[in-house]
Length: 293
Image (tube, rainbow, N blue to C red):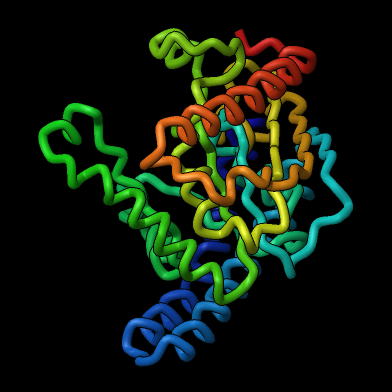
């Protein structure tokens, strides 16, 4: 029964998290009290190894127990010794595990932008913090209008992760829509796309301005679900309809390296034109694969 499978899946996820949570907590405590950036970097590398093992264990039982109907197409040129910016659409919490199934140990451990509230998830939130994931507060326009300093908080978090990324190869993953797609959200924001929300270019622009000379490429990922309303619970129950992940490698456009998104209006317009063009291609691809309505 799907519900039984879902309950067992949740238990497996909890057990694997508790098992790897022990070394995670110990290494996090050591990282907090250890002085010196080089020593902290060594401990961060150990934390990354723990995270990779936690991910690997979960992928192992998911492939054998859930047996997802998954089609993956990725470039053959990926490497863990390179720096990557991954941009993807966002449909479900399942997206994270689908991305891991496609890219685990083929590129460096991805760091992705997280809502600040996720730091309070037991063990997992601690892992995100210890691994130095950037936490976003996503202030509304009204809040920023009242206090303009709030606009710089998310940018500063992005700058920190990019500065740290210069020490070792890294993958930065950005769900540029900022939230999971639903038809209601699409209609509320009057999105020009049928299967996507409006993309946000600011995060990409800042990552490229800080790491552009080191980035080996941009991975443009499109995740498609045959189910119009995919859920993580449905995935854990093993009843999710076919899922497709398409990834293509893009070179970082040269004009982006010297662009100043936040200071020059013409640069901002060019970034928005670029990401909207990318999203139009993605929308066409999704339209050929499934109907989200």
